[in-house]
Length: 76
Image (cartoon, rainbow, N blue to C red; front, side, top):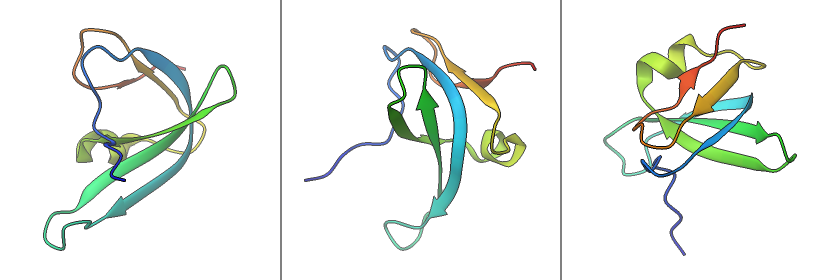
């Protein structure tokens, strides 16, 4: 079964980046993903824009607020 990794506007979460990957799942487009450990200790793998992916490092705090289309890197 296909599971969408796209971030939805109604989603809200925050957590710590634990992994970064990129894949060409359709053979022609390169997609960027981060895996985030949420505060309840569960993990979430989401697709993010390339500029955000490039700016993130393992251990960064990432926040996705309801009503926004993309997560943002939280200040340290």
